Length: 411
Ligand SMILES: *Cc1c(COP(=O)(O)O)cnc(C)c1O
Image (tube, rainbow, N blue to C red; front, side):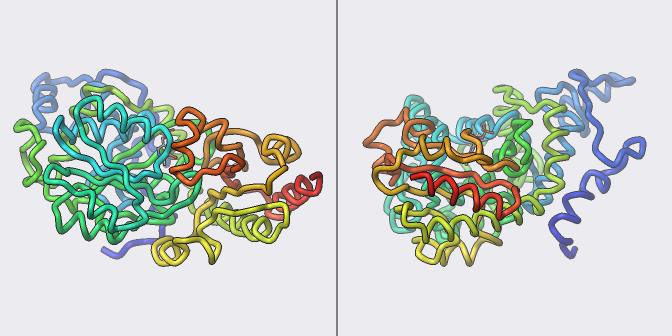
């Protein structure tokens, strides 16, 4: 079947799943229990013989509609939604890895994901952190007990881009699970299936929802991994099509048992927010590129980290893989200008964590999101003490440029 344009597909996905009472948006179903006239139907739902819902921790029609939308965008075989991105990430690790297994993880990952690595080690799962921009480092980290490689697309805050395609080919060859966190790029800028990802994880709280009003996460199985050869699938989930064994286990163990479920109200907000994903990201990427150029040429800025700049170490890779260069941009001010004093001079830019919002948000990196890990770990990640991270919004471009120019002029 030919693939329609990104937005056409996205905004019509609810409708094509079947209209309930003619509702163009999938309705919000807040019901926790799901009842049946004939109790045999309930039994069949419990036994997986019939599709249906039983209890909202595991599934609701609203969660399913959002999962279906994400699955279409990522061209997967099945998607699950979670209450947060972290719930999706933890469910994936904790249900697919066991004591004695080995995980290769990018050294440049979201701070809380990095913190999870310590938790996994405590459970007896070995973790090797690598510079995932280099395929050689990933290859040389492989051990006999390696089960999974986990990377992000564009890393935060230094914007390194993993060797996504090369790692995909390596994982395919070595029969390793390849999990890609696509939060930064979203399905609009990049489809991890094209680099042979097995699982695509996303924080829907960021670009997907886009409005900073709901948390959510997702896991999508691309259908490329052969679960029949994966040792950690419980016998009970080796039923039916092997393509669905992995996602079934994540659903039963990770969503049903661990309970990081998404509310229907949040699912609705995320779904409505996602209608404009492409439009928002086009403007955000344009704004980010314009601002990156301005800062790069400014004498009071020491360094700019943005994949769209020709001297970014993975500029070529980003050009080949992504539709655009993203909307996360970091920079170092020259010595002597205090980050917080500078940020306080900005009128439109809000001092806040979070990213992917319609509004431009910025924060000093070292004393906030990367404070807990300490100086040595920051240096190992290439984070300077004077770095400012910006998540670029959809403001009118000139207003944003004027805001930064005006603030820099104060120093
Ligand atoms: C924010 C983020 C997460 C976590 O998502 P939450 O929805 O905040 O739990 C995971 N990965 C990346 C890359 C993120 O930016």
